[in-house]
Amino acid sequence: MSVEAVLQQKRLKRHFAYEAPDEPIGFFNVVVDCAIQSLDDRFQPLGDVKDKFSVLLNHLTLSNKCDELCKILTCRDESDIDGKELDYEIRNLQNLTWTGTLLTLPVQVNSNTCE
View 1 (cartoon, helix red, strand yellow):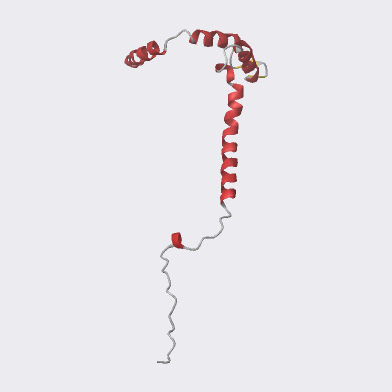
View 2 (view 1 turned 90 degrees about the vertical axis):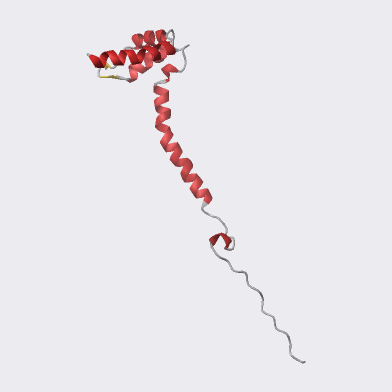
């Protein structure tokens, strides 16, 4: 027979996008940059609050930090807190045991609600 055999090339069926040909990804870095910027914008105010209320973090410079906080919270010669009193209260707070406070708290709440 003098007929040439012509065979069709077999095609693979692609069902969904996960089998689509690979395309270069150009949006990933943009998304990551937006996420980082969003996190920075969100946590920047928390850093400012930490700087103002860092009184509780370092007990070596406690009196200086209490005075600074008192100055920050002062408006027109009226202060919301007294720096020396805050220093005294924080130093006395170290002497309390949290277990004793937590055990007596329900009794105090219960006695206040019954009155």
